Image (cartoon, rainbow, N blue to C red; front, side, top):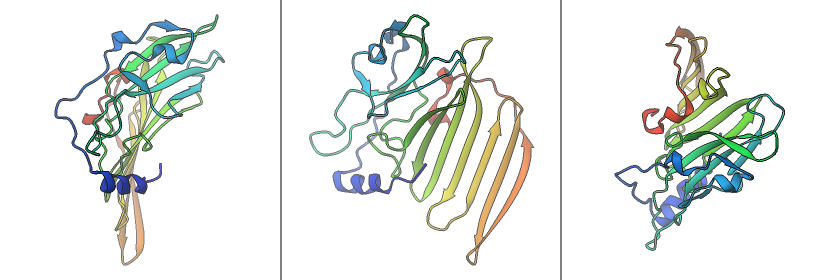
Length: 231
């Protein structure tokens, strides 16, 4: 995911805003259990974020396109004084029904950071967030930081036994945008294997070392992932 330098310019131009002290989150009960179209699952006070607010792809292996909705609070991006408002986000997963329409499969109220939670590299309109479906796996990427940046992608797959979306992997890169160098980790929570690559820069030359370690085989579902606890 590319660093959003434009967002830093916007923050300097309009004022950085101030993150609300009390976090808010969507009430999953407000998201309908079934609907004929993706828009039917957007509760009052929320809206789809950007034109990429709906991502489609097969998540349960039945060949039908399912849908993932990226929601944001339905309040103005900027306040009357030109500073950015804090807007909280949510992710909703819908599975296609055989007869048409969708059924709610999951609501993740804290997976995505708020509009002012990412630092200078954040984008109040969500350009630093990327949601993709690849080979039945849901990838959710989030870029944050300033000079010290973090690029984090979490991978989820539907667990056939429970019908829930389980965290199966994580790709994380922490790096210095000015000096270069950093640490990247690739974690497989199903096997409990983590590969860590550390890059150092000395006299203009990069050196990378790699180690393989074991981590707990975490069983965590998308509804329980909290952005604030990831950083």
